[in-house]
Figure (cartoon, rainbow, N blue to C red):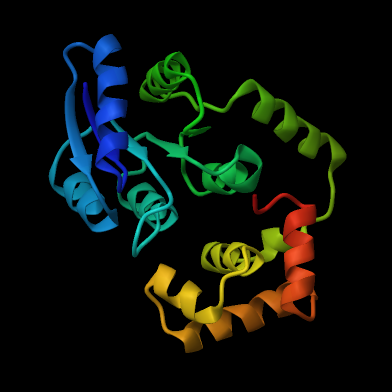
Length: 209
């Protein structure tokens, strides 16, 4: 088995490798510290599974996931993130992730998730599976934040986290003018009128910590 671990923290990559090497003794591991490295290695090398962090400098893991899914649709991608499941999981599964788990998950859960996605399945925690079933049963109208593009959703979360347009532009490697445009679109799509209203909505719907 060949496993590509993508995370911008070397200590995290090393820790994941040690956990997985205990179970997959013959596995070969590759590492990528950012989006560009991840895409380069996926394009030019053969992998059985990619473990992907979504919070990286520059291009986000979300964009990497969409690109991988578009060009390598059969390659399983297991997202491993610091963000709670109810903030990102459903959105990521919709755009091609084979599974989603938080970095607080137990090592044996990580091993089980890798086995499941490599075998062609999809992995979500029991708690998330129950929550997703509840969403389907309720048959609610689309929530305002579900109308946003992936980039708009990220900008919404950063606004709600209290960051200024300049800080958001720096985090996403975009211009302040572009961030202002995204903010305008977010207000239009959600029907809200201010950053305060967006922040209240995000906190109420647990889109930010």
